[in-house]
Image (cartoon, rainbow, N blue to C red):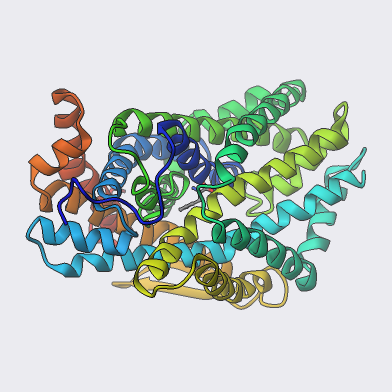
Length: 466
Ligand code: PHE
């Protein structure tokens, strides 16, 4: 089939704006509001944030353009798009394993993502009940600890979130999600801005800013550089085909470069604002920035308990966070569902149910990581260097996917787009100004792969900056 006549059997976005909304919906999620603040706290603040920002600009943006481009040119699930494009460029069909790597990564990420999204859903009701009104930092903390120590509650909320995800995915991501994203995302942002004003009123705003934006490079380890880079992939939904599959539904005329920039800016802004809300609350209440995955659940409720109309604002906040998580989770499973529909002739409903069941099952491991399995830990070393040590099932999955699988997927996407594709192909698909193309091709050919390799080699101790 020629590249001109190819179209997606799953349909197309109705216009460019819908793609931008959907891709922003995929990018903005728990990664920005839940994960970014807690890993920034664990990794010492400023220097970590700086590395993360550099990774977004130098690695994330060019790779996102590459992914959208590959998706739009292939017009199928990432597995099939990679196979078609490889054939078209005279490369081995085995490039489709890159699609498989992504499907597996998406599946594993969703398994724990859903557990955390479940926390957000349960906090809708907890906040609405008014328990946080006037609560102290200790009170808020013990409510959180009590909640996560109950496997039954976590399992119930994980199940509810997975069911909602599967319902949306089975109806096709293009229906419903567009409208949801276009109202709900801006509303979430408005609430974050209201919270920002609260953070300013704590008297610890400057301390929060200082923590986030004054780099202290002595706090930067090879590990934290890896986490920062991994998070750049995670937060932009890169390296596993989510953005590629959304690109495959993109009409031909859209400028990929402009759309990508808008998505990256929106995503980064949300993360930075979330950090500027959380850290002043951390310092004002003498909490520790390195509190871990519970950080937002142990800080934001304090704000909701103190501010005017806190019950309402807090309840709305967790509802919107749930929606932000939903618009990300559907993109995590879409590559797998699209493939099952294309290659196994399954209906969308069946494909969604099977994927959902399998993901749910793996998620049980993450549910238990916070209670019954809390002391069951894993370590991984490579070439005699510890990659991670004493991590729970949840932390292991997160580290393996975000810090290893996504950057690895991204690395190969960059190599394919930069070196395996003929420049005529990428040029005609990107259809951007000459200067922009030159910058992009240099970034995907040299800078991005080089940076990812350096970070990997640094972690396994082959090269050492210190
Ligand atoms: N980008 C999403 C977030 O920040 C998570 C995600 C990762 C979604 C990878 C799709 C693919 O929450």
